[in-house]
Image (tube, rainbow, N blue to C red):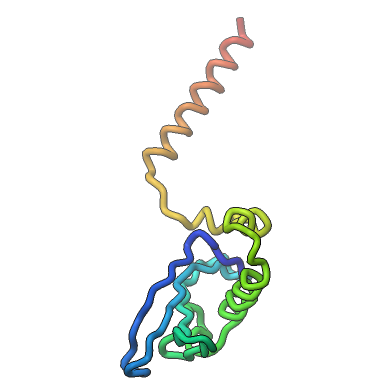
Length: 135
């Protein structure tokens, strides 16, 4: 999978599954390697020194194996470990090392006006070039 680092959000949460325990949830999107589907993931840990992982139903992924421990979660844990080790790197530096997959960008909604305007400009430019060649 390919995690979109820009989509990572962190929240302090509580759960009825762990009453009285402070939890921290990481929410993010991951692009499926095989099908180019963007999955929403929620990975939850106890907000303690040890930071114990809290399994399903608190932590889950939108993929078929999301109720269990899927490869998308493993990918996040791998990246989290890299970030823990590379304490001298800023987020921008990490994003440069791990660029966003173009398929993830294609799954982000955009205004159709922007797409149509750019397409119209390209067509006008092409038409102008063709007309100038004829002269």
